[in-house]
Image (cartoon, rainbow, N blue to C red; front, side, top):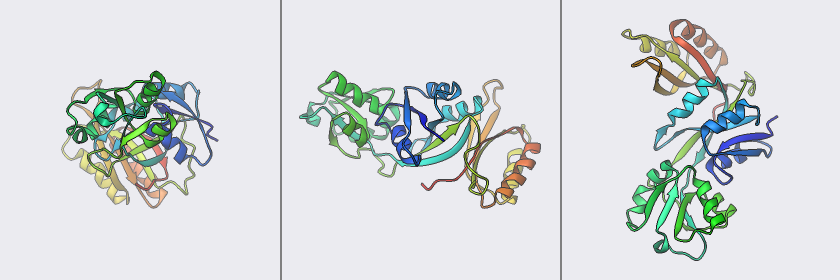
Length: 275
């Protein structure tokens, strides 16, 4: 039973929206300004699970979160895709021309850069979280200041939306992982996706050989991401997502890859979500 979940950001953030959509029953959230604090909350057992963004359809992978899951031996027990719609908002009774500064998460600013070319008078300022800026504008009654955040944040903090869906690319999804301390969330009969990590030596064809094992075992590789191993310069770990129809095929692949690769680890076994 999951009753309390740690999220990056405050209520109204995209992580908060995922917490409302993913779980069958309502959950309480612990608001954390950074993903490090999210992980600390999970490890200290202040919460039952955590939600961490892993990749965006426009900006790609969020590598530090992969590293956190690996470093602290956490387990991905589920995933959720969220349609990300960025909106410009401010205190009521203001126009875009009255806005001098817009604060938001660097990723949100990047995804909305083209929109603001129409308004060269607006200064874009990087901040820690989308919804937290909306909250600050309301609490401090900041006129002339805008936020880029969700419609939910605008509703919660009673701000007016000055422009809807201002992201450059309208199809904009983020994949979130539901993370726990132990891997005991999904029954084997429902598991059809896994996230693994491994390293290879510097021999020709070493990575190709492992990918061939996945293919031979009827696994479908949906993502592969390399990440530098800090302790060993110029050596990389591979983070891989795979889907399969039969759990036994994954078990067979695991046993072989564990022999062939270095540092093999299963980061999560779960039920795949629909984008």
